[in-house]
Length: 200
Image (tube, rainbow, N blue to C red; front, side, top):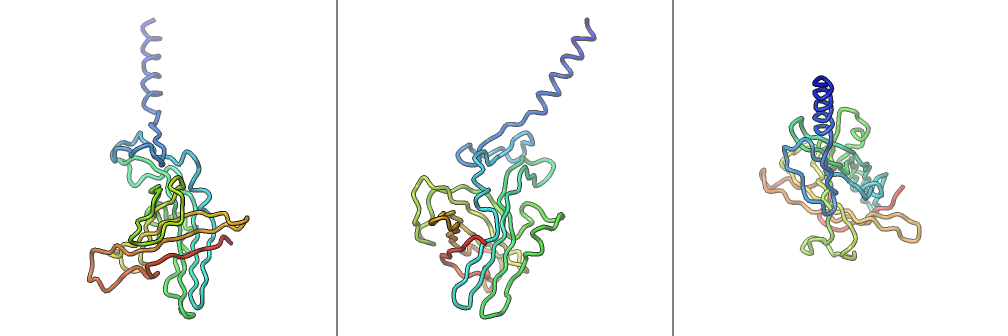
């Protein structure tokens, strides 16, 4: 009997340890950073509608984003888990390719925040000092980082709004530079402003 009780208690301890606390990305609060049993999950699959290849074209400017949802990402072994929107981009101005990180999109050695585009902050309002907000307060927008291909001090931000316009899927993107480190001469390659991308 004693042996049965020990086996039962051991199994109970293992099953309790294996369970995770799941917090929704939208409104569930943040996990403690060093809690490996906590998972900030996209419970409503909101990130999926942002996934795909998106293209902006105007005059001599062409920008391509490739985005995908990455689930259960962990920065390091002692950190919590979270779902992210990650991706890569290409930026062409006047026929000159200024950035192209698209080859990293399917690279199995590049994950999470190592992608050129990464993040999963759910927002309901845009910062009005950067871009005009055409959305309803209930709509979810996603805030992600965009990195410079050669300068790690550059801190760019994208706020993404998904729009289904008569069955044409669009992405309204607010781009702004928040660089505070470095010399100040290098900024996000894509100029600050609002852009409308179309799903390919």
